[in-house]
Length: 356
Image 1: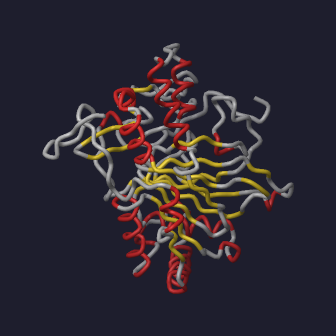
Image 2: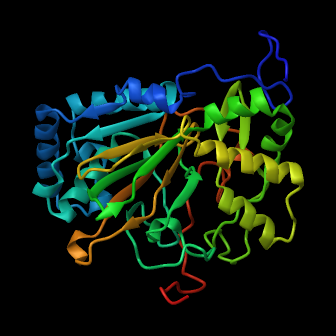
């Protein structure tokens, strides 16, 4: 087991166990559900008032700024939420937004307004969308160019590229589609305790497949080498997506070493262990907020309703915020657009369709 002195700052050569609230097991989250925050009547009144004000200004949805969507008491709740994401367990589920009372247009505007009080949104795709509708488009997730958010397939544990990911459930599926979460810090501790020989590989750079979302749009474009676990200024951050790592290596014809493959296999297998992973069913009106650097999320396969207006629909925001931890610039350059940048908006180099 690696040894570390109390006086030295942890880094890749001097790793340490994570003894913080963000290193949790499923039983701990089940025993203490203070991570579930319910909308209170005064919060909903304030949100409705802010929605009216923003609509009176005749602004397009994503032209709305924090000043155009005034929140007083609820803004303090959102500030506390950021503290919990960054310094607490890294997970908050807000429950009880009455989505049925709003049109989709108003609901998007309301959710966008909440996001303006949390930080800066990021582009999520080459269309430049800062709010993406997560729904099944009938695509085949086995194909590398098809993103999991556009399918009904089971998704393996991964994290997104922003400081925070927010998912608002507008409609749930007919069956399946449970959200599954685990602490990537707990997984690091499992490596530290049980497989210290894997730590160098966990800190080694992997080339993640960019799925055609890189700045050039080339289908074989991959990231610069990114570690799965990055120490910077005494803090540990995670970037994990086993599918992207394996497909990135295949695309550039640089096979992973046995140790590298064993390491990401162990991370992927530990992430779905029953004592590590917890599951929740998304209910309409839930907003799930996750710190991407300490949490991995996934999803079970789901079956949708046949009627278009009943199909599962989530709204996703990628947000960077002022309270987030410092990151190594190379680790933070996840789209080849610079540190903490989203996906570059550009014309598609090829068109996706369900038959591809």
